[in-house]
Length: 211
Image (cartoon, rainbow, N blue to C red; front, side, top):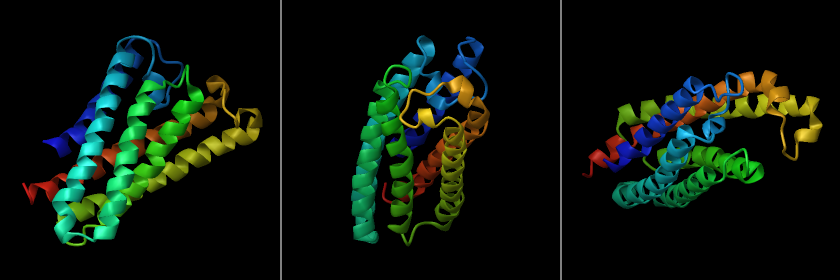
C-alpha cells in the first residue's frame, strides 16, 4: 500500500494539475514545465498538497525498503539508498511549498535536488538488491535508463537556451523567450518524472516478498 502510494500520488498529481492547467486556460504556452501548473487556483492546491504528501511518503518508503530488505541486501548500498531517499522526500516537500513563480531560485534548487538525488536513489537501491526479482530488475533497467536519458536531454536543452540568453543563468527566466528550448526540455522532464514513478512501482515487488 505504501509503495503504491509512492508512485500513484505523483502520477495523479501530475495528470490532474496538467489537465486542469490546460482546461482552465492558465497555461502560458505548450508544452510547459510541470512546475508551471503550480498556478493560483485549483491546480495549485492539488500540486502543493499532492507533492508535499508524496515527499513524506517517499521518506517512509525509503526507510521501509531499507528496513525490510536489509537482511538480503548489500548493506552499504541500502544505507546510501535510505539517506538519499529521505533527502529526495524532504526536497520534494519543500519544492511543493516554494512555487516557481514567487520563489524561483528555491524551487529550481529543490527540484534539481529531487531529479539528481532521485537518480542516485534509484541506482543505489537497485544495486543494493542483487537478488531482486527479475521482473523488477528488467523494469528498472528501462526506467532508470530512460531517467538518465531524460535528465541529460533536459539539461542539454536548457543549456542551449542559456547560451543564447546568458543573462538567465542566475535565474529570473523569461519563459516565453526560452520556449523554443522548453519545447524539448519539458517533454524530457515529463519522461523523467514518469520514469521515476516506474522505478518506484518496481520496488512494490520487493516489499511484497517480505509483507
